[in-house]
Amino acid sequence: MPVSMIERLDTSALSDEQVYAEVIKGITEGSTVLPLMTRLPDLTKKQGKLAVLSALPQAYFVSGDTGIKQTTKAAWENVYITSEELAVIIPISEAVLDDVDYDIWAAVRQPLIDVFYSKIDRAILHSDNRPSSWPIGVATQAAATGHQVAETAELYQDLLGVGGVLNLIEADGYSANGAVAQTGFKAKMRGLVDANKQPIFRSAYSNGNAGSMVYELDGNPIHFPANGSMATGDPLAVFGDFKQAVFAMRKELTFNGIPVLIDSTFATPFLFRPIEHGADIVIHSATKFIGGHGTVMGGVIVDGGKFDWAQNDKFPGLSRPNPSYHGVVFSQVAGNLAYIIKLRTTLLRDTGATISPFNSFLLLQGLETLSLRVERHVQNALAVVDYLKNHPLVKRVNHPSLATGRAKELYDRYYPNGGASIFTFEIDGTEEQARKFTESLELFSLLANVADVKSLVIHPASTTHSQLSQEELLTAGIKPNTIRLSIGTEHIDDIIADLDHGFAAIRQ
Image (spheres, rainbow, N blue to C red):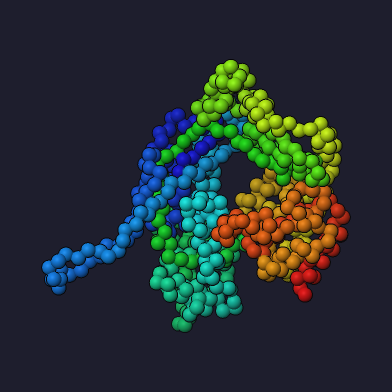
């Protein structure tokens, strides 16, 4: 799994083998899921795929044979593990980069490892941003196939009884050799005993990291990760025969300068300015908040002017001669502004994507009220989030203000004035009820647009994302009961009243 970083990282004194050993050791120790799985040999730098066994050996007693050697009847298939690249982007200030005595690698090593294994665990368990070559997440697949058990007052029966979680796994011919659970599930299992009044949930000390606490449920290890792999809104626990899953690491890490491009349309410059946090290029759809009314087509590209486009050969369009301009090399004539100059002189010339004067006028007018409008957007959105999270017909609200742990820390740090007036929630009901809810609102406009002064609503599964398969929808975090809201600037009482109207419609 190659790692890409920004600018200088003091890696000149480190060999690839040394860095690889440090990172992989940290990932495999910090991950909750990987230690439960079967690890195959590492891939080399040149390997993009690793062939794995698709059938098991068979044995028989020759003495009872007819003299003709048997052959297996199982057909071998071409089964591979495909190497996927996971890039880690680490924003580093110019002051740190200029300080040659500062050991950047020592500073970023642990945060890099933490984000690595957290991303891997979320993909394996919940399909979060998983590569297409990976199987669907364990918890996602279990939910899709009905292999789940709802929690009742009889927790022992839910876990160990007939029809319980472990029984479902064993009925399929597997052994539940591990589990991953939310931290809050500990309290629910404390005090559980078997028929002989012996505790079935207990703690023990790991043989790995000295002093690290692990737990057992009926003799099987159960982990309570603090790395975000099990968060509020996920299943309480995921049990399985994790040894059936295999993984391998590719022995390659790269430290190449790459630019950080961020689409900051939803945040707007009022709430977040990415260049101040290390981004190189920022993109906005001006049709959204900047224009404010969904009536103007336009876009913005902001180049921070700090990235060195000639530092490697990854950008030949900027660092090599351009034949349409008599061999000019943009990185030589424009320096760090090569990217934005090329956009103006070639792409703009070739596509004709020049904004009209009237559209420019309307967008400039929108900018004059941007801060005032976004303040109201955020204020209303947070009020709607508070209303929805306590509503009996709402199963889940997906808004960063409700995050926990590290995600909440990042939200509070980077969005002190709030953020995300565009978010989703899940109706506690069917797809038909979700569609009826969106169609019953009167103040909200049923539109695919977002970031308008008007409040907007849509049912993604049957509209904007209707051409995706069920698996693709789940991978994108879209369920049949998911509803997307774009909260406008109307009076909050009117917004809440309209939402009440929608919920009343699906109660009938």
